[in-house]
Image 1 (cartoon, one colour):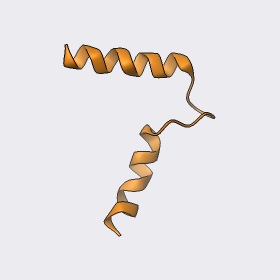
Image 2 (image 1 turned 180 degrees about the vertical axis):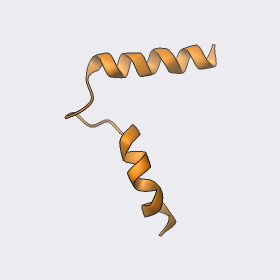
Image 3 (image 1 turned 90 degrees about the vertical axis):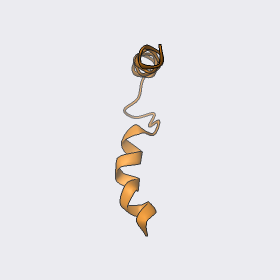
Length: 37
């Protein structure tokens, strides 16, 4: 039951073809690498 509680938040970060574009994915990857680097 705890999983369903976190699902709405997780779905925001999940890849949704309707709201996610290649540019958005690229920006996310760039930010991720910037944080790691």
